[in-house]
Amino acid sequence: MTATTHPTSSPAIGGGFLLEDATPESIFTPEDFTDEQKDIARTTEEFFQKEVAPHLDAIQHQEPGAAVAVLRKAAALGLTAVVVPEEYGGMEMDLMSAMIVAEKLAKDGSYSAWHGAHAGIGTLPLLLFGNEAQKKKYLPRLASAEMIGAYCLSEAHAGSDALAAKTRADLSEDGSHYVLNGQKLWITNGGAADLYTVFAKVGGEHFTAFLVERGWPGVQPGAEEKKMGIKGSSTTALFLDNVKVPAENVLGEVGKGHLIAFNILNIGRLKLGPGTTGAGKHLLQVCLKYAKERTAFGKPIAAFGMIQHKLAEMAIRLYASETMTYRVTGMVTSRARDGSWMKAAEEFAAECSYVKVFASETLSYIADEGVQIHGGYGFHQDYVVERAYRDCRINRIFEGTNEINRMLATGMLLKRAQRGRLGLVAAVKALQAELLAGPALSTEAPDLARNAKKVALLCLGAAYQRFGAEMEEQQEVLALIADLSIGALAIESAQLRARKTGSAIAASYTAVFAREAMEQVEVAGRAVLAACSTGDALRTNLAVLKRFTKFEPVDAIALRRKIAAELLAAGRYFV
Image 1 (tube, rainbow, N blue to C red):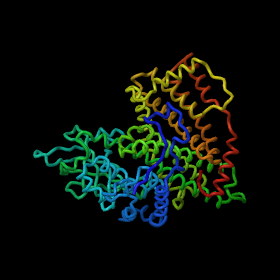
Image 2 (image 1 turned 180 degrees about the vertical axis):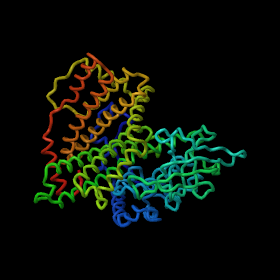
Image 3 (image 1 turned 90 degrees about the vertical axis):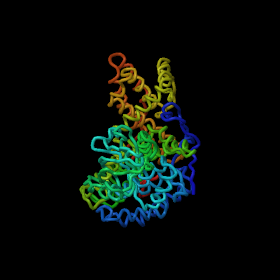
């Protein structure tokens, strides 16, 4: 079975969205799902209701075997091997389909962690980097969930800085095997996994990935960690004591483990987009239902303006997050039509980071306001929002912290510009020429997305002029420039989808979101420019910033009330 997405076109290079205007037809949105993708969405949703939901208490309390039993039922439907070729027992569908499955399974953080880790970081390293013998040996068993997969990268002093790993691998004298020694931490599925992708340094120097079976002597998972959230997931350490790993179980090439680690992280970051989107939709639905049922002062709290504000704002941010998520997924799948996800995800690595940051922070907002809507009951463990509030917190740490992702994304764009792969320099020069020519007279409303991009370019140019080669040391500036880029991508995505669908509620979402996002762009831009210029230069830069961030406000109060009324009538998020 195969499924193909149909974005008509997308930026050919990562970061290209900053340099060129897109059209509504050029971006992929959920309205473009194929019939097969809609089918797998329905199948996954039905599976969650029938097979996952009845066992959530057992999973949450880590009853032995509960989560694995559900995972194996998912495997029987092919949901753990959506992207695995049919010859290895998979469904051989595309990356977009895998993202749809991730969204539909995201109603519970614990089960989605089990499923996502197995189908994602537990299987993709082998699928994307394994040789034919390795795939034949292990992929069918992972596809069926006969073996549970896990990914072992982090260590006590090697979290965000993965290459600082101390786990060591030494080749035997006869070259037949490697001996692994060390300790890995925060291993999702660690307590039940049968096959671990373990990263170690050959000879203490060459960062390399290995396929390690649980049953081998010297392999010992640690005790379950006591976590703030996703309590029903398995998270353990993994101890490796003179573990003999056959030489044929080296994954990829010796010394090239970083290619596996970082490219798998790119996919994982992107996958957090639909994961947090699915969780956000579920929480909004829970909050809409509660707001209609809970009464205060003689009427449902849904009738109160402040509650309506919260409900509408949840949907507004969710719309922007969902739209950006599937737009970037469309970019990756469009470029990966030759099957090379690794190269496609690497090309759009910055955009994958943007999705991870924006979507995870959107879900945090929704969960926080969900607790607030529930009042005291939101603080009680009998209510969904309490658990969701704790569960969602890990998403801002998973797959590299949001701070690391902000810095990495800006750093990647700068490096590509320096290598001549991204025309940032030419774009900054063109912007400077435009500014010297003076403002063009126009009676049209400003294009907020285009102006947000100009602010990002203005700040990039000012920062590079000020710091040059030392830019990588300016963490705060790098993070702020990432926020400017995220804002530009989110605003443009929201605007284009609203135009593409012609949906009235999408237009309302966009009208509020784009303007409030531009206010955040102005704040971030002011902070960057103040760090990069002084005196007359600063005053000039701030005047330019003000020009680009100027817009006519809308009646956001009335729009939010209208949005809330439509959501309450529907009982769910919709576009």
